[in-house]
Image 1: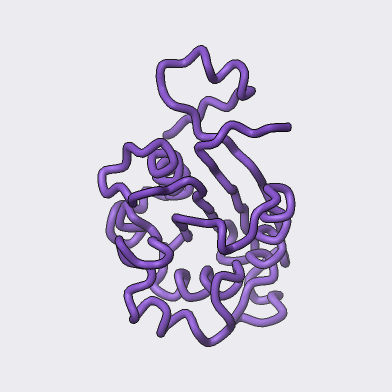
Image 2: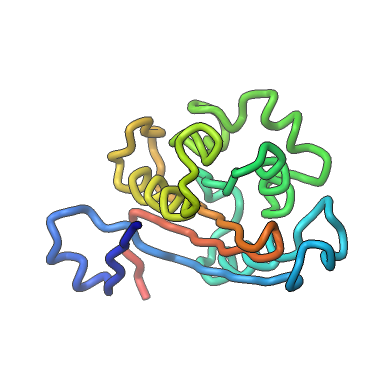
Length: 174
């Protein structure tokens, strides 16, 4: 199991831990079953959920310092980088190969090892959120220097559904 404490920015000041603020959220479902997806090489749900999260957060891809992409299967980081809009279609493989997603790269991704290397207990989305929160707090086991904004993406229903969250360590001025 897992649990998150979600509260207002004002109430968060009463806790001893440094808060991680949720700047933006997005959810989308493309189809009820994978065989009904329009194109099996891309996910409309990934694109829609991330667009909503970025718009709500008021940030762009260039503002993201850290990325968590659901990766229960080896192709999902490629889907994620492309469909979430971090690279153009067909460029994710070389982007990864060039070391951009490694610690010290231009966009460190899945810094806890991801679902394939860290753990996949059937609820990996909770661990991805946990890593995003730890990164913006500055307390991750494999901390990336200077993380202010982390983007976290989850998948449901065999790629047909997606959820996106944008976290920051800066208190919102709303």
